[in-house]
Image 1 (cartoon, one colour):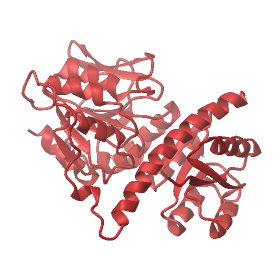
Image 2 (tube, rainbow, N blue to C red; image 1 turned 90 degrees about the vertical axis):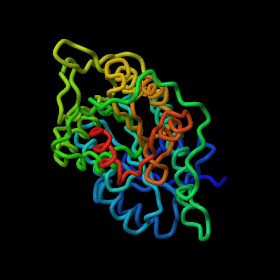
Image 3 (cartoon, helix red, strand yellow; image 1 turned 90 degrees about the horizontal axis):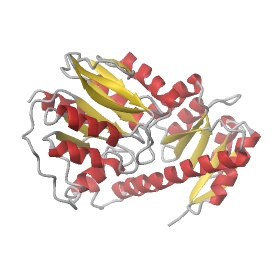
Length: 360
């Protein structure tokens, strides 16, 4: 398999050095060149053909968002990974970048220890490269003349028998969503398509750092018919509200006289994730049993599958995003293979399918 050729764009000499060292340490990556800002990067791209660009958010002359827009216009097949600091401003710009087509992002670690910075960036970029390779191969297959695309093939073969449900599905009283890589763009399409009269609370686990989940909630709230916010500890769930699990906290639902509420904990990560979809889904299975609807969407890894198995045992209904509309088909694929998915749905049809399921 050919290595992924990477152009590094960053105005910090320190991070250019660290990122170059990271790229050169990865067996699936090939360092191509560096650029100090977006304008220089675009000039270099006229002569070189990177597969992937790591793009700093804040740069002089031409910032990351402006550069991304030009890359998308001139080189639509080139992947872009945003490199963002943990500031509120950078989080907001990074979310805009993800919405207009950046493949993923990496948050710069706030650590003066260069070795720790290297290790964190190496782990993040390695995972992103793995996901990018899978997506790149899928896209290339779909574009190959005469090829049979995955959408024309039968659904992924289930490798496990579905769990035996204790109850038949009831009318859902909650919608629980697990989502990761590609999530912000997918949520921007799906959540605003839900009607203002949506009758149940929505709880979302999106794998992101704390600053970014807050920015995501604020961005979605401006676009949606429903109220979107970060979930708060002790907050009672209300219909017409969308609650996003805060980054670096675990979120679960707890029963309380008069209704159900959000609990935030510092319990350990699960599947390397905090918040974790499995953690949320387990609590939904316990509290709502067969009166729940779960959706597993684009993302890398298998977070959510174990929790969905518990939900199915209690009689919940489960939807999964289809491969074609996923940025990364990891989380939905694992749930489908486990036999816990009732229906595979494209992103464009997801909101209407959710509305139908909740109205059952």
